[in-house]
Image (cartoon, rainbow, N blue to C red; front, side):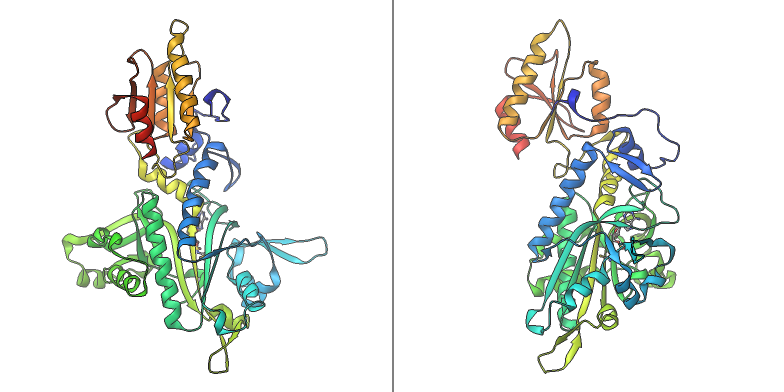
Length: 437
Ligand code: 5CA
């Protein structure tokens, strides 16, 4: 992509409500544009990052055997009346009437709809376990939408649902998700720690929020610092190993503020190991057993002949919120560096545009075409402005690798820089290898 042709509306004057780094950066680099309070359009740069995150989430969910599907954003109120949440959800739910006067709503989550799909499709324990997920927009009419896409009204969520015959089997599904989440966040370059949490309007007794520590986070968390040192790579995807992994995490004190108890904290965690910090909730998993299956009469034939309500869990990830979390963590001292796994482009060529130096631009175009031929996603900054203005702009756009073509270029060696490190002079082959690795 040529930057001169790219739809990238950079803005200089930030609206005063942009208080945190991610909100500011996303507006300045034209990743998003507010359309109304808490509702955003995703412009090409932001959309690319969002889709890359989505791809990693999808891969990791498929890897543990979860099956992707797609449920609609608009749901009928009837199933929510069956569960009793049509009233309980309160003002956060956006209620709509269609032309026949039927009550509809914009889904804030999908426990009811998935239970309804399941009950009309699966009748026997023989078809269990099942794990289904979709990645779909949600709407919650938050009282105070703020911090851009961090707490907004319309947001992109991955929500998965598990179905098992009993608590013991359901625990295995919960452990699989636990594992999938930890792997997924590692791939995104994030350290997200599972912490015991309140179940809120979803319900049930058991839940964990996955928290990324950040000063700008909205959650207050309390933890034993040793939980951050658990090496998740030593666990495999088999029943015993997954159980060990979960037991390892849950043996450390790590809770969100609703679950916090000062006496317990002091009793279980040495003073020097106590962390009390702010964090961003990037995911939340729940086990609520037969809460919805009982209310919605979602029964399967048990091995012993009787009919039993299926045991369910649900597992959410804030796909759009993750974009913000990644910025909060990786935007330091005015310089953004996207993790390579989700960067909008693999590399940017920053070329000097100068009437007296036609050579530089020709070289830049040559490298650009060659990288494209190698299927490397490359951005060429061909905008007519001085190099220092270009560097400032790319400090914000945050592509992790830069090829700088200007006065310093040498014969067949090009200035190559990984953001945050010193630049080096490399041949085209060496550059290609670096990027591909
Ligand atoms: N049904 C369950 C799990 S599938 C559920 O809805 N869980 S949740 O309410 O915790 O939401 C899942 C994730 O969505 C959260 O962990 C958070 O990362 C993200 N999220 C929730 N509300 C918002 C919001 N207003 N703006 C942006 N992301 C949000």
